[in-house]
Image (tube, rainbow, N blue to C red; front, side, top):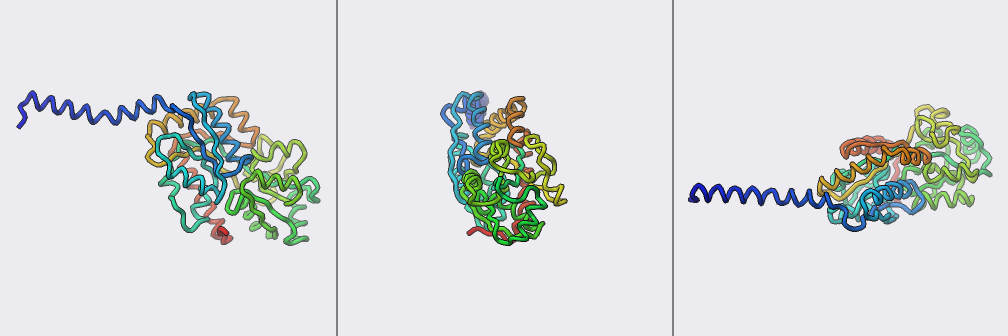
Length: 327
């Protein structure tokens, strides 16, 4: 048996050893990041996920002194990107641009290689974005009622582009079809940017595009917005009516933010969350997001998780009601 002085020395050393991992994590968080960080985006450049990732990435680069590099990995409605982050080392050097696709995929795919809310720790929400129903200026309809009338008179002749099967532009369009009874042919792309390119070129006739990706085309007169999808009008497009003004009960908007691999040190998560919230309090960032049709969404990781859970339930109902499945 240890004598009393030796026993005290042993307990003191044991207690010190136990605090080393905690001190090490805190030290890593204080110096984080020491090398470039990747923000993985599950869609091609030009869409809302990509634009918002670049905005917050630039802010984090300037504040934390290391490059936050955008890594576009399109495909499977962001599943390829999400799986890459799930498998990544939980050290804060690979982050995920989280968005409406993650709320949708939980129901859209019968089997996933991950559970989003289990395998991804949510860092913080950034913004709530709305979409706009946009058509080429040559399209004969000037308003939503005129579009509905034209679509019913020409069933199956309107091609509706989207960022991919199961993407938010796809589901927003399906909700529109469900509530109006119109028949449109869905044409999926590998991201919102390519869908808008073909809309501008006349290959498709309508896209329920994210406002960040379409607002400059609308302002330039290259696209015509018939309505925005949220319950209230957009600051970025104040003259464009809401869909609910023509279809009572129609509402669709998207929440975006950052995620990281499960088991990423909480000290790193908290540091990133603090910087995101600082960005959202910055007047210039608020104006930039408003120009893109967004509303800032500061909050904790838990707040972001609650929003994702609510969106998962809402869009699960639409997917099941329309029997929407992957190819």
